[in-house]
Length: 321
Image (cartoon, rainbow, N blue to C red):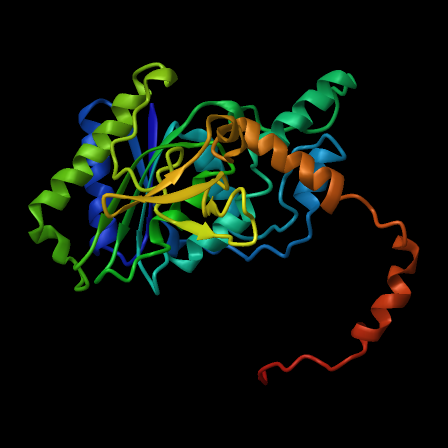
């Protein structure tokens, strides 16, 4: 089994130390481990062209990104190759590294497991044997541990956004770990409990991979969502039936306060709509296919309507020598 660590922080600082501790734990159980430091890579931002989604849903293709000449292909290959993933990031302004979000934007739609399953099925049904289809490694079961490291409790979006990175690829998150009050570089080495917890997390990823998928267990803090364990819930007062929705997996439910603690309740029949589950991902894909990717009946008018905006203002740019 191959377990990949991705460090999204400074070299040899807290997030890197914790992901290395986790990898040491996985290695103790025989895992082949590897570490990537995201800051060492050059990854261009997503342009929102939708070419990857069109490739998968309309052309039965591979979903490959059209942006080239950067290190995206390198890390994509490493993620496809691995069985387990340990992602650790420093927290900046309540969130993980912006570089991780850039990678997430590139990998999200192109590696959505439902999109890739649709493309594969369409190729089979149409007898398409030429051209490149979705990478077969997309469909293997992977598990992940997420580690967020910050200097204070200014951390609301850190673990949720780390989780978002794994969501499209259907990677099962079996642990989440939040370490606060370690603002100074390397200071986590003085926190034995956190180091031991990170090692336990790495061992748990390896142990999970050694057993059937049905036996996978989540060992992190339970959070509010009963499905993805997120603590991030959005209030939607305009919906009387579902006034709350999980900010990560999108499952809808209701809130109540019981003995001073907030509970997020999800009806059994609504669980299937969670984007952590393949059923929810197919709903999302169907929604996109029938709504967002459906040509407007007035598409022929688009060039004329765009003229108003095309010639309005010029872009301000810095002077270049």
